[in-house]
Image: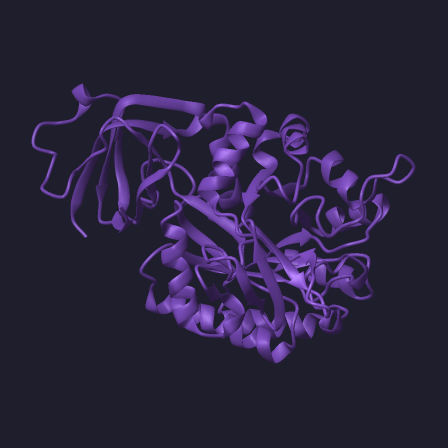
Length: 394
C-alpha cells in the first residue's frame, strides 16, 4: 500500500493528549510513526500520497459494536452486498470498524446473516471494516423484548451457539443474552470461556443475577436503560447493577431519544471512563427519507429521526433501533456532558476496541496499529475517513 504522511494536524493520542501540529506516518496500512511536531518530521518523508490535514483534528477511527444496518442496508438480509453497502454508509460518518449485529429470528435466518457477514469479511468491503459479529439474541427475555420479535426468543443452548461460532469461523465477538432465563447462565460461561464478550441485555435480571453473570464471565451491557429492568430503590435491577458494577462496560445510544441527555451526563460521571461505549443500534432506515421500512421481518416507521415498530393499526409503537450515526453520537456526547473531545473519544474508539479484543490493533493512534483515521473539522463533522491507510470517504 506504500507510504503516506498525515501532517499539519491536531493529533489525538492516548492519555487525552493532543499533538498540535503533529503528524502520523503510515506504511503498508499501519501506523509506523507519530510525530509530536512538524520540526520532528525527517526531510523527504512526504510523498505524493501525503495528506495535509489543514490544522483539523486527526482522531482514531470510530468502532461500532452494535449496528444492524443503515443507508437502506440490513444485516439480516443475508446478503453480503448489504454488509458492503452499510460499510460505505457508516464510513462517511467516521466509522472504520463495526460488528454486524443480528436480531432474534429463526436459526436459519441468523445463520444466513452470519454466513453473509463472513463472506463480506473475506471479500473485503469498500468502506468501514466488518470486524466480526454481534449476536443480539435469540437467548433473551420476552418480557424485555423491545423490538426483538418475541416469537423467536428461546432459551440458550451451547449447541445452537456452537453452530453460529463454527459458521462464523471464529468471528463471533459479542453476544447479548438475558442471564436469568433457563439455560442462559450456562451459555454465558461457555461463551466467555470461548473468548466471546458476553453482554447482558433485553433482560429482567435482578442485582443478584447480574452479580452471578459477572462471576460467569459477563463484562458488557447492551444499550443501557433500554430493554432491561430499571432501577428501584429496593431492587437496583439490571440498569442499577450496570451502573454499580465496575466490571461491566455499558453501551449508550446517545441520540437524545433512547436516553435522556442528563442521564447520559450522569453515566459519564459515575462509570469509569474506560467502561462507556457509544453505539448506534442503527438500522436499515438510517439515512433514508421518512417512511416505512423493515427491521428483519418487522415493519417499522421512520419519522423525525425516530425508528419505531409499526403497530397493527398503523400507528408507531416501541423504538426499534435508531437512525443514529457515530459522528452524531460524538457531537451529542460532547454537548450533553460538557466534556472535551479528548475525554469523549475513548467511548467510541479504544473502549469498544478493548471490549471486543481488538485493542492491540485498533482504537488509538499508536505505532503498529492499523491506520484507521478520521479527519474532523471544528464542528466535529467528518471530512475524511481512512481504513488501514486507504481513503474510504472524503
